[in-house]
Image (cartoon, rainbow, N blue to C red):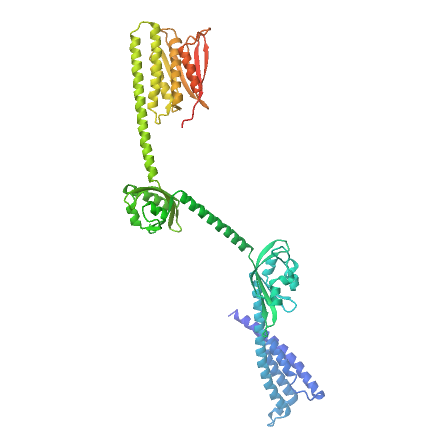
Length: 590
């Protein structure tokens, strides 16, 4: 209620103001009528009031016009008829004029109401049209005929074209910055679609236009234009619209490039699938039905065409031993939304199982999984045969090493038997050295037989076993062994290295200490940056000042060191002992 009263008061106050203006105009008109009665009697008593009533009604509305008519009629009646005369039965001239005025006022007010409504509607339509133009999402303009004067322009035009709206008045000014033809020539005013529509009546739809903005940037426009004709068919105006399609065209070009790349990728993928003899599949994660292409169908002995394999049929085709792994692989891929990989045996239509490797990707949003499959049945058969051959080879190699080891042990036993039956010290020493060399070779074969690949030997274990075996030849000497654990050496280097260690250790046992004296010998194996270093050291008598002629052991050491690319360095101090260090670069184990 508190809001309605002020509103009603404001409406009443507005009507009162308009009525006051109307009464003022009528008073002026009445005064003119009285003044003209004596000067121009031919003018009707109420003639000047009708235009005023019409003007008030059109300008301010029907109510102020009605007030003006009543006020004017009463005023003229008082002044011309002297109110008492109105009671006479006969109508005088002024009375008749009053009646005519009243009837004319009614007609004038009716006509004024219609005219005002028409004017109001026309103004409303014009305002709506102007607002539509201002809010139009693109650039829009209306040119009036015949001079091409700019009548209306959308507010968006300034943003699209970059031109000041106040600087645009005629069609000629459209070319201030303007469009460019394909050859780079600027547009003339008559080249613009809206001007062509105005001058020739052409209708333009979706014409492309390169437009140079004042900042020298370019936009791509899509232009529409057409003429506006009157009832006689004459052109009274032209309407033009343009949309900035720069981003859209750029997006279309990117889309076309992307489509071309997708097509090229699809062709490359198809070629790769065909070259790799791959099949394709698609699994519906709701029904678990499998759609396979012709290549995969052919793998299973089906007609080489796309086929739908129902879930129950697929489960029956999978080998019973592979059900668990296949289902777990798919469940893990679905849970993680990632890749799928599985190798299963599927029974074809001929009843034989085929080994298929499937790889794919789960698409959670589409509730699908897609992937490729390859038939590896023959490859798996070849691999199994190769594994069996390798296993047989390993067994034969181990058997051969075992036989060689036994043969070497037999030779060593015969040499020990021969050594026990001779009293000649020289023969006994020679036989001992021979036994040590045979034991070294046998020990290397024993280590090789215990390796996993028959290609490499754990050098630490081999040297430790060698120290135990050779050290037993002279119980008075203690042999200490310090080696690197789990160091694998290629057999081609490990066996000669074992023979060299045996020779060095045998020499130390025979010559480092006087017969019957106690002592110790240290054998050390260290891993270096590029290989290993093996050291045999004693704390015995040391080497003689004048070296003797090299014996068989020294010759064997040099020959074997040269064979494996090793370098031997000897350090000896009389009375303090001898140390021999062998350094070598290890071969890479395949």
